[in-house]
Length: 253
Image 1 (cartoon, rainbow, N blue to C red):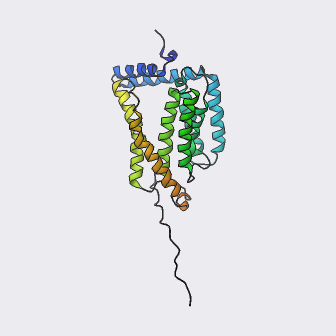
Image 2: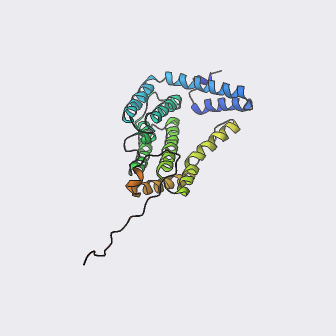
Image 3: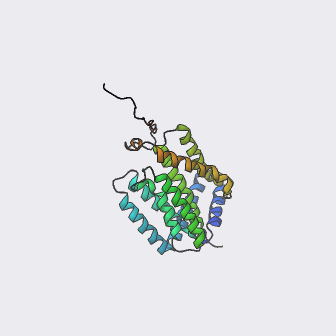
């Protein structure tokens, strides 16, 4: 029987590992075995793709340099590199990154880069999102790796932007519900069922896409002064002050 580490189909390998975890009733020993086998497969698959690993490391090296002196900065880029390396097996039949993958990873790292907090950053993120999808379909480079990276790029960037800069509590709650909760729910369902659930249909993703436009527009039109003072991601965002119209009353005699 072929080893899990050697399985070319990433979904099949994931289902095998989840089934073993499920059969072990989520016991500590089963969880440790699941994590060790998943790590072994990830490292084995990364080693089988030295060109993709080199491209990924070079890209994050550039991003790491650009993130110097920023928050979350280099810690964010390092986490992005580690997650991407551990999922190189999802490239499946490919042994190198595609241009669309590069755009997706750049979008995921916007919070760590210069201009990541600028008023136009939300519009830039939407532009990169549209560009990487079109490019992947045009070049025929779609893959589970790209789909995974796209999902996590959306979750990471939009949750960060909303919690960091959005003044409305309702929009902040909606952002968590639209991006963070679905990832947690799919992960929990996969562990509970012992297999990966099917991807949601595009119609179910439209509310999140609409919320992206709302958050990007609000961030674009928000008063510049709100973005000036640094604060922790978890701290409440300040409210955009109303614009004061100049008085038409004439002073003096």
